[in-house]
Length: 310
Image (cartoon, rainbow, N blue to C red; front, top):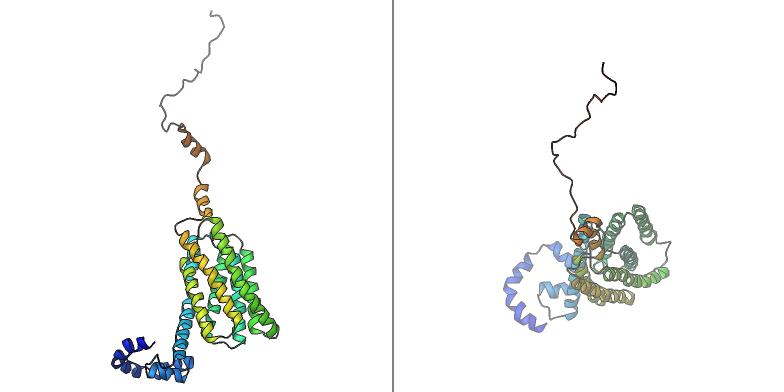
C-alpha cells in the first residue's frame, strides 16, 4: 500500500483534491454510511490508503459487494433471453434452479434477521427472482405448465413464511435452515454439472451467467471474511465457488459442442425411406409430370349382329 500511495496517489493529489471537494454532500454521506467517518476521512478526504489498512480492506469489500449486487440484477438475463429465443430448455436443469432458489431464499431471510449489511447479501433477492423466471421457462418449454404454476406457488408461500411472518420460523430453526442452505447451494450445482456431462454439451446454458457466478462467489468469500463473522455463510460461499469452478471448466471444455438433445432434434425430421434409398444409391422413380396426349381407343357404339340379311 505504501508503494501505491507514494508512486500513484501522492503525485495525483493536486488533481484529485479539487475533484473530491466538488463531490456533492449526499455522496459523502453515503460513503460515510458504508465505511464510517474515520475511514471516510482517511481514504476520501486525505486520499491516503496507507494510513489505515483496515479501512482500505473495508472499502474494497464494500465496493465489491455493491458491484456484485449491481451485476446480480442482470446476471440471469442472458440465460432468460436464450431460453425465450430458442424455446428450448436443452442443457438447463430445473432441479438445479429450484435448489438454488431455495438456498437463496433461506440466505436472504437469515441475513435480514441478523441485520447483516445489505452489500453482503443483496444479490440473493435479485438472483432468486431471476431463478424463478428461468425455472418457469424450463418447465413451460418442457410442456409442464402445471408444474410451473405449482413451482411459483411454493416459492410465494416460502417467501411469506420466511420473510413476512417471522413467527412461523424462530431464530434457532432459521440457523438450522441456513446450515442446510449451504448444502442446498452445493447440491444445486450437482444436477447442472451432471446434465452437461450426460448431454455432452452446455445446450442453452448461458456462459455469461456461469462466469459471473464464478467471479461473484470468489468476491463473496472476501466480503464475508471482511464484514460478516459467520462461518455458515463463509463455508457456503467456499463450497459454491468450488462447484462454480467446475461449471466454468465444463463451459470451456464443451464450448462448441451441441447437446445430444439438439442433435436428435436436427436428425429426427429426416425421412427414413429416402435416407436409406440414398445410402444404397437407388433412385426412386418419379411419376411423369406430363401426359402423352394419346387417348386409348373407345369401343364403337355398334356391335356385330348375327341376323341374316333378306
